[in-house]
Length: 351
Ligand SMILES: O=C(O)CCC(=O)C(=O)O
Ligand SMILES: [Fe+2]
Picture 1: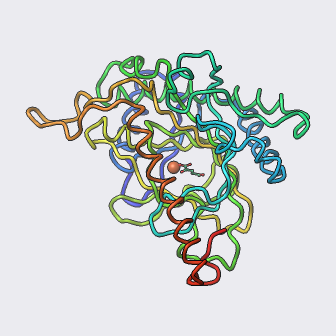
Picture 2: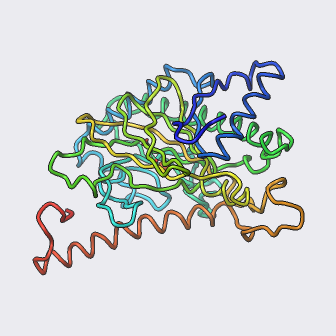
Picture 3: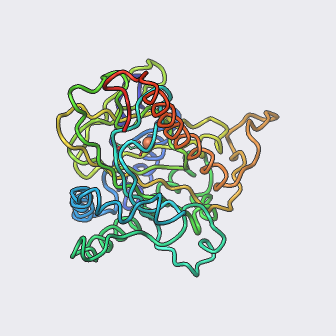
């Protein structure tokens, strides 16, 4: 059982693949208890090889070591409309009232060609990936191969986690299969520069307090700490220290809504005061964009109403994005307006 004030526990997921009935039952019980408590757990004993985790993390660093000009060749804002490519530092504000976030990212997803129905129909985040040119990165082929091998392995892991989640709700292991068929999932390579010592402590975030928009998130952290999860009961921030080889798994808003708020999509943030560069790789598993999410079985008492109306996966996830990017845009416009009137205090203005 996870208790009040405990950081997300590390569960041995190998019981799902090889365990006997008792070990599998224990895994299901532990996952259920985490879903009800903080919506966060960590797993070892999964099928994603350590070398592949290291390989993608090495590429994460190599990509962000490129010059700004080189990274902008694959800019998410100018080179496509399907949310792939490079995102500049300070593009998002997930926590109202804080400064634009000290993180830069590279968005990668399933390699969807321009003749694919998802691309033609402009489905959520669907299209070709944006890879640097060979002039910029001579061994870019190794980058894309490593990234895609890692991505597909993690998407498979997400489907296995969904099988365990189904069992936590006393549903058939295959309950989420239709939802997971043709699923959209987005991976972000993230780099959090070390927070400058003179940045305002209370307002500076690597990523502000937020909940994730999708169904489940599977996160790989490098060695540098910084991720914190809010304990729902004590309202304390709990550090999620990186454990080699482990993934941090958390439920997103879609799963919370789908479970009629029985399961928790929990608030978390990153503050990088380590004095070192921090790297991480979340994969956000949304689901089939056209799948309609409507209160799951066993999530409300007899006769109790569902709290939410049915919604497609696509509509639910897009709503979350619009809010966070809109905030950063408004912040920058306001800051520019104030700066032009000479109102912004030194150190608070945003470039
Ligand atoms: O970098 C991390 O550890 C967390 C990232 C995160 O929460 C997100 O991208 O939604
Ligand atoms: Fe997150």
